[in-house]
Image 1: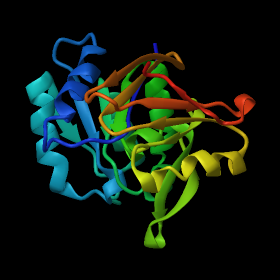
Image 2: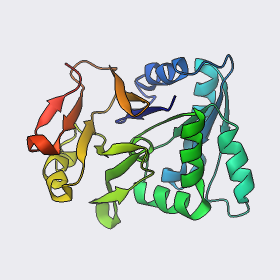
Image 3: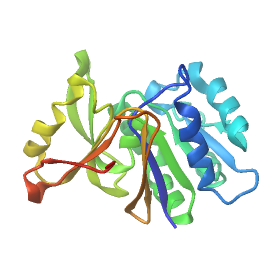
Length: 226
């Protein structure tokens, strides 16, 4: 079964990430799963790597990292590392840079193959948006928002950090896109998809939600968390 966990945002600072990572771990049947951390969206900044590798071990499993900006990596090496994992976790950052890098290296097609193989795909912010048809991100120069075409495993346009005022423009701009239903996710909320369908919405903090904005309903907000 194809499993994807999309997290709207979060951090380790107040402990929000721990229940979300444990939830992802619970979806994997392997006794000692192999986690693969992809920090592409942060331009492969190693700053978060050790923290996530340690966290993966804490919740159960072994962690590894793949820096896709490393031009010495061959396609076969990238493919072997991705398809050799049980859980892929993608960090947040710049969605356009992430997709440009994945398309350039062939990682996009490999990750589609990983999904079909049953490898769990997960991440927060850009690491959540990347699994959908489209993402809405402030990734242009000066923090300008734009739609970015993504891996295309889920037929929505996704927006993270939705409780933040600066991301509320999504509810208006998705009407201009016009082609897809929207899925907006607050920080500290994870939406789990199994075989392309929403299976679970996990909120770490009271009041945080996920929202569906359907094109056949005028893109009105419909809470998935009630």
